[in-house]
Length: 312
Length: 146
Image 1: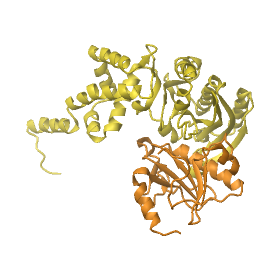
Image 2 (image 1 turned 90 degrees about the vertical axis):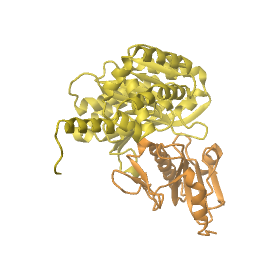
Image 3 (image 1 turned 180 degrees about the horizontal axis):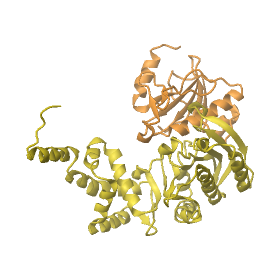
Image 4 (image 1 turned 135 degrees about the horizontal axis):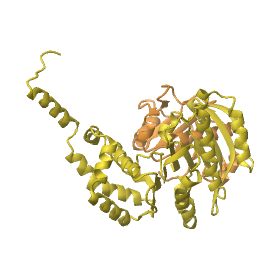
């Protein structure tokens, strides 16, 4: 997973695909600028439909990047002028290069999935290493160099949303973790930025639904995520319980408003999430009337008023 | 799944390269700053296999590594007949993009229904799940390749 960024529009305003594509490229270039001392992007490939030939993608252009990535991206934007809006929504940008952290050099990438179908699986922007036996994920490489962890993880999560504050697209969620990028797997995250606390609780709820399967889905399906989150937040004991839990499992909370959480160890989030799930989310799911029960109540309310089904 | 070199899918390979070893990368002329798979080997049944191992997913990255390795090997006049990914399981978020045929083990795109094939190779990419590996190896051995 490495670093994964999910973007959205903060205001209700129409952003054309031109502006959106340009904003994604600018945000990616800011990511590259932040990590320039550690990750050198050497090539940019522009793909249509998918970022690989084996997945039916078409390589449109390959650009050897100079040290002036800003200038290269200006050329890329010029090149993109020839594309229609529809075509732009189908583009994927793949920056490949090399990570140098400590004494280790390892190939890496930054992918911009744009509005393609891949973004629903892998998020908007993904920055990682190409896995090796020793470093299966960027976070393993970073953890092997603890002196740099503060800058590479904590400082990035704290500073990045401010760095791109003038962009039409905003950061909704950013997280470092291991494995397949998935914001609905809070237990594999090692550090995260949530624009609002509600997003964190919503992601925890989605995680437990994905993890526990149908029974949990049946419990939570009748209720909107917003309703469940406001229900949790409305209980003062929940907030204080979470604070205790974060401290207990060495997950540091760095800010209020938007929140940045940093796990001290690879399993800090997992432990935090597992206890939250066991002691709050699962009991809530068990207590709430589930889908079947609610349907039964609807049925008995109707039939109780003398309405009987007489034919199909 | 922490081991070096290739999985013994068709018995002992008679030529084997551990692609996490810089010396082996050099021997094959593969660039260390480009994505590469975990192993490349030749079995006695004449298969030249490029192998990538993963925990849970990430299929897209595994395919990138396979594609890049195969392209470089073919450019260097090496032979590749098969590509395999060995993994624990498909991650749930990737299950809406990919499926693995339980009989043939071929990896398919859910969007198109087509097998996923690396350019210039006839055989589609195969995915073997770790939990099935001993059974699959036993089945493959029954073909008595040697």
